[in-house]
Amino acid sequence: MEFNIEECETPASEVLVFVLSSLKEKRKWPISYWFVDKIKSTVQEQLIKIAITECQKYKINVLSVSWNGAYVNSSTFNILGCKLSEEYSNIKPYFSIDQTKPNVYFTPDACHNIKLARNALGTFRAFKNENEQLIEWRYFEQLFELQNEAGFKLGNKIGSAHINWKGNSMKVKLAVQTLSSSVADALQYLKETSNDFKNCEPTIQFIRIIDEIFDFLNSRTPSGKDFKQLIHMENIIFKDNRMNSHIKYLYSLKTIDGVPLWKSQRKTFIIGFATSIKSIINISKDLLVNHGFKFVLTYKFSQDAIELFFGHMREDSLFSIKWKYKKPFMNQEDEEESTIKLFVDNVSNDPFIKTITDNVLYYISGYKVKKLIPVLQCPNYIKSLFNKSNYTNDHAYCQKNKEAFNNSISIKNRGGLQIASESVFKIVKLTE
Image (cartoon, rainbow, N blue to C red):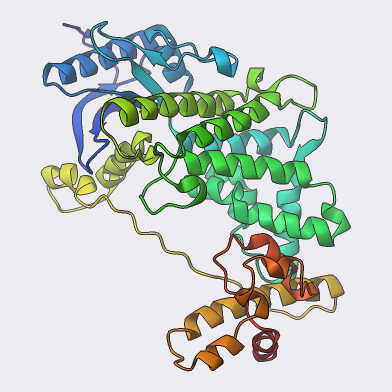
């Protein structure tokens, strides 16, 4: 296949790069680049065909193409043969270059879609679910204001940058932290303890569904848990059904004016998530059944490889271009570090703030117990650090011994938190 691009005197404003990412190994290869200025979808379609055709010459099977949700990209894949702006059952997420070769799927990038989900809610300020209940941005603002007043955070990372997202719209981390289970847990706790949050249940549901979808599309390691768990034969049907129900929920959302959200100007995140899920489920079924794969990591379908490549190319460095070309792909393992940043800078006389403070300190007490376990040698000493419910049922504390200071723990715990005894809590509280 030959494709000629006419010379143009207009300076390039962008560079279009193609990177191959292996599904089985950690290898990634940049294979071509094109300097462009406002590329047209028809030109982009031809470049994709060239890239895939050249790969097939060397017996490299391209199963999927990942891209963000820009309009030109959606238009490109529609030209290639996909059908995207449809009901979920009618979405066609694949196209064919050669009838003798397998179909190639389109998987919109999950990180880009979660940014668009946050942007949509932040712009519209509110959606309606199928029961006409409001999903509102104001609860994020109220949570931020409450945490500022209290001087600490309820186990989440919401800050001014998350609320003023328009100045940080490109930062994936802020979008992921905004629509996360930790924020949903904080709102769940406040819903049960404050009248200002009593109607936030629809917002909590929206956050949890977006968080689960993102986790499903971002499984990185075989040791992942819950929806970050890899796809294998034993769980693919469950994941397929679960994701189908979540996409059905997203398609049921409406603007305040009653327009279906998936038909509005902010539809891209819904179409993107739906297309990614449908593509990945179909690819996974084929790989597990016909190609001997034991599991599939969905992170492999993201465009992080090219983001890392551009990130290193932007760095000021004395290394050669050759080194920059290789560096992003030499160490593929990302280390996750979680830190607890809970500060009580002032003491409030507000009983509600005091109750929240006690819940935070009780959470910290469990962390202290976790750190003491490797140090202590006496079993009785260790046992005295724990709440008795730790030795009976993992979730017994949810029904028994539910004091005002441990309400938030019963919401946040997924089975891995250490539940400290009341004595430890009193010591931590006194020390604080």
